[in-house]
Length: 332
Image (cartoon, rainbow, N blue to C red; front, side):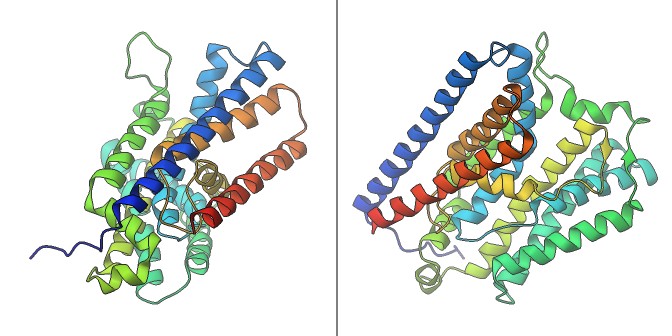
């Protein structure tokens, strides 16, 4: 028996939405180019190969987390747990590989499944028990943080005896280049995320739930089931982010992670995904994550104090949310 399709949006409204997304992506990409030009002029050290690779490498983890968060925010939800769940996935990978002696592939798979499980649990709490996403994921954030500390004994887990593990992030699959695998994983996951969001039934229901959850439910769609699936998919992205982070550091740091969720959400919003749901793109999120990294890196190169870097990033996020509010008003 086929799963019923949600009610289709009128063609003219769909064209308007596509045009709005295109404009938002163009503005975000234009902002990225302006930032690159500005910092390149302000400092000769900015537009150098090593620094560009450094920017891409720093974008990889936040970018992967943001890709998963994009699905959730399009459904008009929020996930505050991605940072600490990422850490828990790193810790579980460390336990599987170093303590249990499992092969690296199996340990990596276990870390990803840890993220998926956390996402499914959050999805069940939100859909079945009607707990608001903010509260459900806040609770998951605290649970994941506590579990990471308990399981690891509040001590880092090192992969120094497993030389192949760090190559997951810091090796290079492309011969003759210095592009780390972490960057390739990020862009590869962006392609996969884009396909899921735009070419599969999961993506259609993601947009439908965010646009009008009640109408989607009345059209015969099992909204609760699809919410659980969507949060589970976001958890897979979080798990992959945890693997990449652990491979970059060659260790699982149980105290790391809190605060990453805010950067991931910021990247999604800056990229044009609406906090009110029903609108967003993977490409926009990639651009948003790059904007965050370029801005942070450029300010650091210009020797702007850390506290002022935080102020500037906060102002950019505020501006992005304000433009989203204005855009929503115009679309009504």
